[in-house]
Image (cartoon, rainbow, N blue to C red; front, side, top):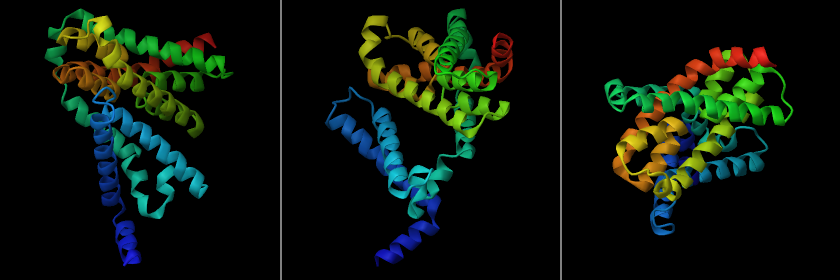
Length: 253
């Protein structure tokens, strides 16, 4: 019976992956509600568990695809691949309203540009501090510090190696988790309690999942505003990082 079940799940790998991720997310939100009383958002817990399971999968199988190296969970590699990533970007972008961001005033728009450039600069400086000295690598890691979506998009456009792209994704994931966990704690100190401040915060932080998760734990009513500018942040980052910012880095190094 076990062999039959395993065979069926393996042959329907993508459906199995959806079910597995769904169970993981459900467990994460249960942990968030019952053990942290909502102080740590379920999204942050889900990402942490996903990274831990990927590490366990790599150690157990000796492969380089994490859980996807298990035959029964091979669909996780597809679910987490570039196709679904790009689909998620498009789906999120369609939910944003350009008129709404204009109504927030110039400060919301400026926060997006400032957030992208500031995050990129910090990531680029960290890359230099770790000994990287070529423009493509520095730009890719800097873009990853913006978000884990901008990093691989930039790296692919510039022809960065898979190792560098992986570093950029890791940088973005760390940022996303930090924003998710820290937002509810810092919100009272920065006046993060109204739509305008949520839009500025989303523009400065940029990581859509991190901002949405953090604001959901702070005040669910603020999520659409922060997520909207964070969505534009991703788009602006994908435009600026492999073009203007790359040319600037190349001119410097």
